[in-house]
Image (tube, rainbow, N blue to C red; front, side, top):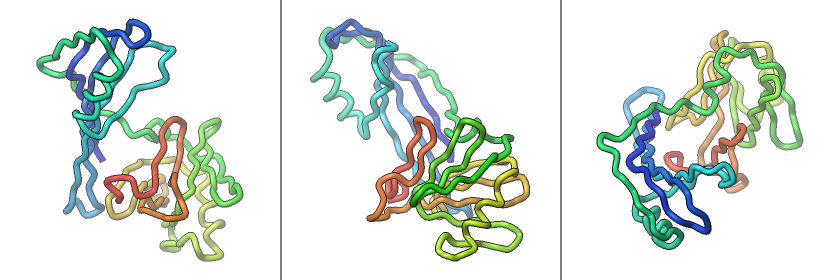
Length: 204
């Protein structure tokens, strides 16, 4: 998975108050585990540079963003950036790479992976790969295999079209969380401000 953010315009306008705004386009490409299939999606960001405004807004199309701007802002003046300001965007879990998993906690019908005061909540089906092979979530030994990940350092994280959210540990162990559509689920996983929704593109 590779994600790029390009700031395309900046300016100012009025929406109840005067604000500085920034427009950006996100381009994210996912591949399957064999690298033979890819899918690229775009999202369109409107960022208001004001602490009292909670976070950026995202739109699935440029037309949707423009419609929101026309409906919400008055006297909006934008200056196109040529060339756009381009940055690679790290995966939300990248900050955990190199950190040992402290504990696995089972809570009702989901589990938590704890790195100190940071936690990844997993609601979707998952499976564990270790020296014994693959262990599916439905078998009796699954909780034990999952708990044995505690103490291992996170070596990498990726999102693969055919496997979902994949966490790799230094021992070679892996945890693969399904991101496919599930009628029983809305959220597949959650970490801080990042949420993975079951069946959300490109996993639809």
